[in-house]
Image (cartoon, rainbow, N blue to C red):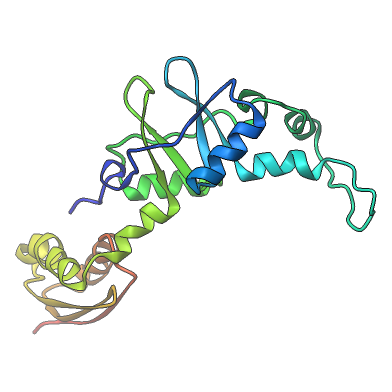
Amino acid sequence: MEHRTVGELMTRKVVTVRLETPFKEIARILDDHAVSAVPVLDGLGRPAGMVSEADLLRKVADRSDLTGRTPLPHLEAWERERAEGRTAGEFMSAPAVCAHPEWTVVEAARLMQVQNVKRLPVVDETDRLLGIVSRSDLLRVFLRRDRAIREEISHEVVGRLARLGAAGVTAEVTEGQVTLRGTVDDALLIPVLTRMCAGVDGVVSVAEEVRVGA
């Protein structure tokens, strides 16, 4: 049982900017390509950071507003320094949080969660950019057809545990929701089956109606 990899899901044609790219050009690039963030590359084509709409808006929000209708946001010293930047290298979010193409969707999703980022540049062993993977890319695993999920569970989960006494179990899959039915030789197999099924790409939930055979 193998999870889909970042290399399978990433976007290979990536819009990028350079460290010296000025503010207004970045704003035009984001608008022209309908993207909300781009990697910032150094002279060797390696991601040095990311520039997002949030980084650009920090500069706008820090400007004076004569109407006084909204308060000036509080910025930490490092945030104010970045807001005053003029090029990508001066106001980007750095360092870049990157993934590798052989990573699984689980590894990438966990890194996004821990680092609180929405996308990951994908790099090779020399840190050169290969692509980019976003939250929406990772969520594509939930577009898998029920039939494909059921077949994977039958072969890679039940099939592997058959010799241990799980041969009498079948799986029904509806909109990614798995229901296990049948019998097992040992009650200890039930939580193992449930946990393994939950790890199959595209599975939303797992319910079991499995009993121990006579």
